[in-house]
Image (cartoon, rainbow, N blue to C red; front, side, top):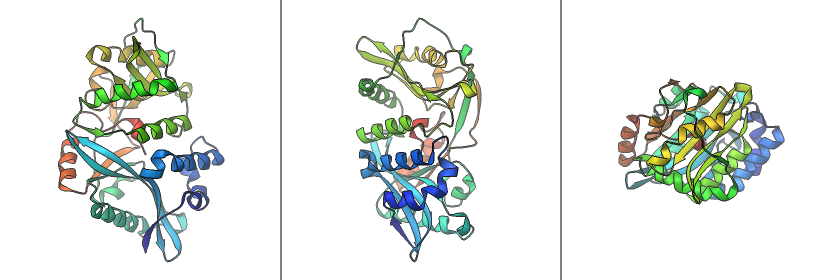
Length: 318
């Protein structure tokens, strides 16, 4: 048995028809295939994303998506490999193929000097615990929109020309955090593409708002309005400085509009303080897990385990 990269067109033909029921969501099968291929052909996809399979002889017996990200821990930068869409065809399950596949992939990552491996477990996190992954705090919140203050904000919808300002604002927030995912140009393009695809939400439509201070962005929120759930589902927010941070609650309320609730992952350190204490509980899906591949990765993971908020935003989900 050995690992091999699966070319995107072959992955689309052999794997996607089997995984569509699990991960296509509200997308049609054709949309699911087209969007998967678009990710693979993007600037991020060409450099940092691969589809990988375990082959027993000439037979593909398990597969996963492999991502690369950089983690900042203080001034240090660490290489992280992400694992997503782990899949074994139903007729081949129970034979240990997925365990062998991931063990080989992790051994390869160690040999290539990666510091961390990470994933989001939608089902059976115990499977990954057996491979050495550790569960980090993964929580979600639910707030009444009217628990947030309203003000005379004049928010605007985020446009294509605003993304550079959003990036600068995000980076100012990240400067306040010791540990998190760094974002290059290609990572931002990947995030924008996935938001346009709507692949992360089973309902709702994209609603991203900003508040300007002069020509600059003072604060932003990214998420979807989901009338089906009577909620605004926030994926991320950011602010340029302490003064701008005070506009975030009102901006979230503006994004919710006439919807009753605001839902989302618990924000990372530094951002959680902007929201009132509400209903916070452990997420049952998208549980964040990491595995150290080096001594530096072990130190980073130890620090991340003690964080007050989540490790990352919903926009970083794979």
